[in-house]
Image (cartoon, rainbow, N blue to C red; front, top):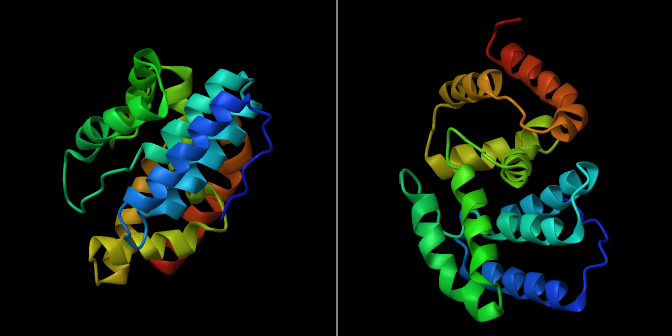
Length: 199
């Protein structure tokens, strides 16, 4: 699990984030890859990248929230997970105390993570990079295997070829993610190619 950076949020913002964490832990799917741990990890990475990108406290709080809720609904094979997620999170976020303008920003972050990602704002770029952070880390292999199981792909070579195609077409949206993760991503790509017999 990626450790959350120690950010000194004002009490109101901290309480909201903690309430969203509780909501996500209870309500997220329990799939091999898409589960509360993924949500908590994306939130932590979004905060870390946001700090490196120079975001202020309010933007970091929005990034943490985007990371926590972005996969509130995940059904394998569904094409509308993000759209349904946006609908599902409106009421709980309102009840927790998020004003409508913040919910709209958070919704933008959720929708930006829909594949292929199409972030329009700086915060959306950060959360998109955070969502696939593992591709540039040593966590990649465990997470990729969990994702394979979740997707129900039994042929591991087919899965590795699909993964390689994604990895080679992937582009980072922020300078921070590129600086911190591109070297690791290239190592993982090289290992994928080796396992597929291309090297």
